[in-house]
Length: 302
Image (cartoon, rainbow, N blue to C red; front, side, top):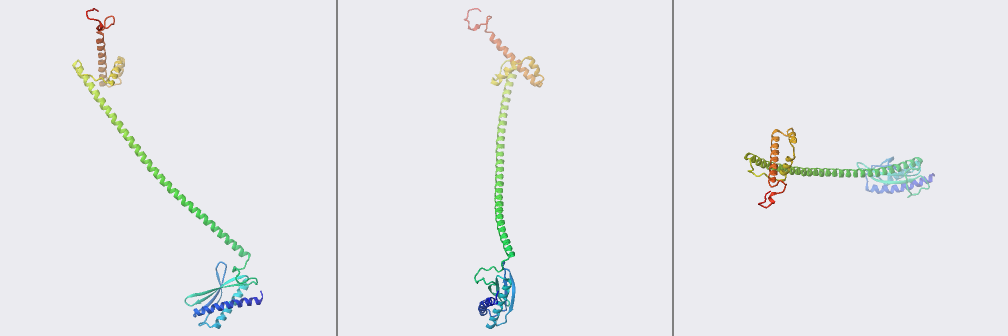
């Protein structure tokens, strides 16, 4: 780079810096120092030079400071090669930075004011670093998207699990209620069956007592003083008793108790005698030839 180009760059920056410093001096008469820093692409800054400012600041001093700042910018930019960015700060005692001015500079004759500024020269290392940053950003975006997906899946799984738990609790409650209703219905059926069995037992006991009482009274009196009930069950029992033989009765001795056998034997004998009496009574009307004598007219001999 030629000396004339560097001089032109320094003069242009000096004029802009002097004009800016004059406005700052009018507002901030108690300037403590000026500080020049280089700004990199990742917004990190590097100190270049610091100027202690006396109070009050005269116009000639402002121009001198502006020339020195511009020269420092030109020298640093020429060493780095390529467009760069700097930051000039005004400091006040007890306050710190009160004003800043960005300065753009390019150590290339093809660079024009207003062109895009990368603040560092293009190199293989810079391109690799930029590619790594792009890959890092892309990886972060991918991981963020995957994290969102996993978070949504976890939330959905939690919702489904809560719904399943609620359904299981509801089904279990319904099952308990159903079992309770079935148990109550079964208990009602058992109670009805017991009541019906008790009623049948009471009826059977009453019928047996009445029959036994009539049988005992008739046997003691030697004749029928009390009518014996003739219900279907009694008739079937009589038919069953009459159908048994003496040998079958002897077998009953080993099955029944003595009291039961005595009652059953008396019933059998009474039924046999009753049937014989009925047959004898029916045979009294029959003639020797087997015809019914009650149907012939009176006066005729048999």
